[in-house]
Every structure is written in C-alpha cells, then in structure tokens.
Amino acid sequence: MEVSVPQQMLDELNPVSGFCFHTAKTSYVESLPTAKKAMALLKVAGMKKIDFAGGEPFMNAELLGKLVKYCKETLELESVSLVTNGSKVPQKWLASDEHQDRKRYRTHLKTVMNLSQKCKEHGIMLKINTVVNRYNFHEDMNAAIEEIQPFRWKCFQVLIVPEENGSEHTLRDARRFLINNDEWHLFCDMHKHQECFVPESNDVMASSYLLLDEYLRFLNKGVGKPTKSILEIGDAAALKDVYWDEGGFEMRGGIYEWSKPGCLGESPKPDLDW
Picture 1 (cartoon, rainbow, N blue to C red):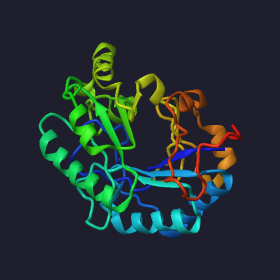
Picture 2: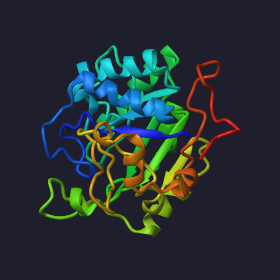
Picture 3: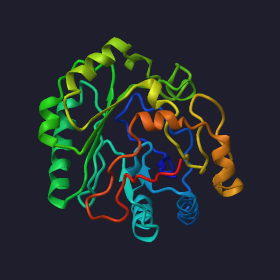
C-alpha cells in the first residue's frame, strides 16, 4: 500500500493563514517515544511517504527535527516532507509552502524565493502548495513559478470543513475566502500549461488524504468523528473506521516520483498493491 499521511501531530499555528481547515483546538503535543511508536506502526502497515503538517510544524522545531530524522534514517521512508508557510524555517531547515493572501503576497514571495534557492543549492526537491482563494484566484503566478521551478506545484481550491473553519462559531471562519467553480477554473486555465501544476478541487481534495491528528487518530473530515488512536486499536482497525477516497487519491496524482533519482525506494512502481 502506497499512502501519504499528513501528520497533524504538531498542531500549532502561527498567525498567517485565515483559511486553514485543521485548526488547533487543544495545545496537546504527543511525546516523542509515543510518536515514534505510531510512525513505526504505520511503516509496518505500508506507509512509504509522510508529510509533517499542522498548523505550522516549525512551531515545535525540536520535536519536528527528531521525528523527521527518525522517519528518514531509522524507518527509511521513501519520502519525508514538511508543509510550512515558510515564516518560521530556521537556516538549517529547507522547505516551503506558499500559503498567501493579497496583503502578504510580495513579502511571502520573497521568503519562498529565498528558500527555493537554498533548496536548489542543497539538492532538495521543492514542492509548492497554493491555496486558491478570494484574494488570489485572479493572480498570474506563472513568472514566480518559472523562477522558483518546483518539481510539483499543488493548487488547492480553498476548502470549508464545517466543524473547523465554516462558521462564526469555529476557531477560524474561512467563508470570506471562498471562490466559485468559475473562479477556480479561471485560475487553473491561467496556469495549466505549467508542467508542475497539480490542481485539487474541493471534490478531489475533501477525503482523499489520510490525516493523523495530535492524538494519533485518523480524521474523518466532514463525514464523521475521528477514529480511536492507532496505538489503542491498531492501524488496521483505524483504517476500517476512516473514510478514505482512494479514487480521489489516484485522481489527484497521490502517487508520483517523490524520491530523487537514485534514492531509496524509487517510485512510482508498477506493482502497487491497493
């Protein structure tokens, strides 16, 4: 099984994004030994790629560093990546994510440019994530993307998850960022010629990710309650209790060449077991 598990364990958010669909409702952070045990369990279950997300993962950089090292060096996962807005990345860390709105675009773009240059210097595969929303759907980002040259540019149609960011009663209310399908397609048509362009509409994105929260539970975004902890009931039982849209996972190109040539466990593979 080839699965990407965006890890929400580092569930804190610095004040950069108004539309994040996984909000920090608690300050709970799992211990390193327990987190390692969970990662090892998922490795045995077939996990080959992990994305550390949040929130903003660099809000807990020390724990993040230890988990990244463990996943890469001990578990030898094919791909260990970080999803960050770039505002908290220390000099010794190299990663990027392009969450932006119109007010912050120029300042944040400079940060992304600097990080992309460092990634090139160190031979790191850079992926850019852009949340397409009310304040940037009309922006022509072609020149910036051509200069940054990411190997993959994922563009998400801003998503509302009612219990997370969908009303005045949730920690964040992202409704003001919403765009309609015509506006989404306008952005896609403007950028679809970029070879690295990977669009993800709401229909494709909603349930095509396996998300593990700070309590080591798989999240059923928008369709039900979280599972019990994978350390309590095991990964197999937890996976039975989570809705994962495998068709959407394939449709959005969930399996791609995520390792540098010559790296451990090159993918994709012709014998993927679904």
